[in-house]
Length: 365
Image 1 (tube, rainbow, N blue to C red):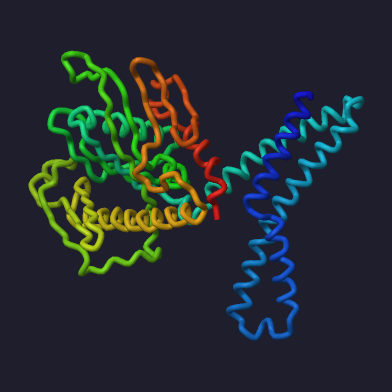
Image 2: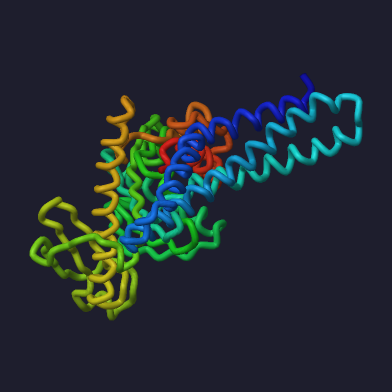
């Protein structure tokens, strides 16, 4: 089998798999059903219901037309290859079509993977040191640097809203707001526990240590997103800021801590210059965390319905970073790995994000 034939076969398999995941044949049947409903004489008697049907029909047609078209292109290219073995011009044309199809499919797969309701929004990223004292706190600081380097490459704007320093070194916890297109959609691939194995720079005996840090990612939600927070359900405390912000910040109780009583969630913000700004930021973080709690419940229930046995929550270990006795970063969900640990810790994490997004195409609604 030639390289071109292999490429064309792989394209057909990819497109057919995606068409199966999204049940394109079933959607085609649904389109016929809605078309028949529209033809009924009483269809427009309920204008609101009729408008909803028309919107659903338009959305279904758009999805079906796109994947039917690309399906025809891949199958036609493979069929043409069968009669093109002795035609150099046709083979050259098919080489170009294969490259165009691969590029088109890459774009469409990414679009599908980023089709969640808040994937285009900014993100609130929090990192928390696990057990292990200074070791874990230093690992948290390393992860913060990794993500800040990644955001620089993406040309996102970042602002550290809350940070608690470690007693000796590192960071106990930190929260960063990241603004830019698709920040949440991309960074949600990073939710979970990150594990580091290395020779400890804090151990006089130079022993190997394992450290853990948990990464949380929440969307920056628009004010019109329906996240109900009853004022009776929150307790607000103000205190002296320990973060950056100059002498004015340090002399006044500008930092804000909010406790959400029904869930026990606690959020703080202390790097804004005024108490009002810190309160607003803390509420934004709280809304994001409440949204993520509901999303976690939904995914857990969905996993149960599908009979999945893997852990669907956001607290499971997702990636291992080994610096000793060998160099390796491996994503435990997709098996993507690299020996270039320095590049990863300098923000080169796109390979892990993209692989995770593609592996979760089947979970896109």
